Amino acid sequence: MRIRIVDAFTDQPFSGNPAGVLLLDSFPEDSWLQKVAAEVNLSETAFAHPLPTGGEADWALRWFTPTTEVDMCGHATLATAHVLHTTGTASGAVRFATRSGILGATADADGTITMDFPTSSLTPVPVPDGLEKALGAEVVAVHDTAAHIGDLLVELRDEATVRALAPDFAALVTLSERGIIVTAAAERPDSGYDFVSRGFFPAVGIDEDPVTGSAHTALAPYWSARFGREALTGFQGGARTGLVRTRLRGERTLLTGHAVTVIEGDLHA
Image 1 (cartoon, rainbow, N blue to C red):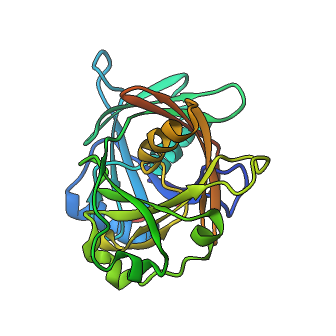
Image 2: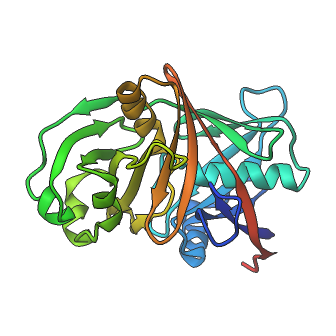
């Protein structure tokens, strides 16, 4: 079996968010999928297999962290679509059947891939006890996201605060179902992006995820309402960074980015 490591939301190797991608004939036992994801040891490994023609989706897709299966993952979906298109396995639009419904991915003429995801709901909530201490920063506002994401979206004072965070990951574990997305408006209007974010997911075995596509289904409506624009660009990351172009379409959010295959080899298992 061929396995690939793809850097997503970047056009440069060793940047963006790496994901493992494995194309299969069918899904084996969950325990095997989890062992492979643990062996790859990236924030997500995607497993996909083709579905019969004529259905509502073309491929079945699942995502695993090193410790658990998740309901939604943007960067591993982008990585999977990239592999399908660069290997000639698929062309045009691809529909994935997932735990979060049907997700689309279309290859664009400029080499990017645009994904069609459900827009997250945003519910204002009080600042949880211990959040500011765990982050080491003053919190401006907190919103709970939809069930298929399970994050807290946390606005901080400014971009510099987001970039400088060194959170207490152990203290963050109990504060949300999946993770904490911290965000702030871009400091400079000429920076090439509209907002910044970082994503912390110690509850699912990932201290920091470099570029989290699913989080942008919440970041897009949050910042689109603030800026009054449907189309925005988000910059995410700490040590590794990437860009996500977002376009709000009511109940759906379009996420656009590049991807680069950096490793390809045989899985002997």
